[in-house]
Picture (tube, rainbow, N blue to C red):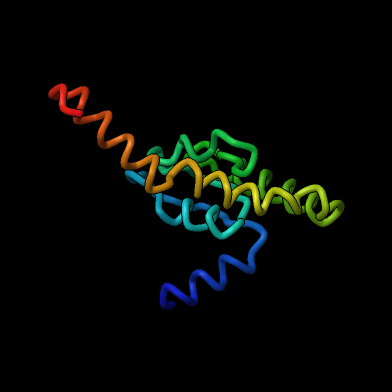
Length: 120
């Protein structure tokens, strides 16, 4: 799919199942959350911080049974009470857009260089 097609699919999804392999920055999880998906799955280790909020449910890496049970439980809850999760979709998007904004990135780079060489 093209980037636009992926964005359209993610924008219409309530959940994103993350079967990620260990990696640095799990861009697919960030894209899903930015699109408003609630994420359940593996962090890929580099994405541990993305699961430190109520919009993502981390499953221990490679624990297939825990993944299946967790996804089933979450989907059943969603079917019973979808309104409970309605606000979470916007919250997931806001979480990513605020935590990883251009301004936050610029501040981190400046802080890093300042720590390295006293440059401001």
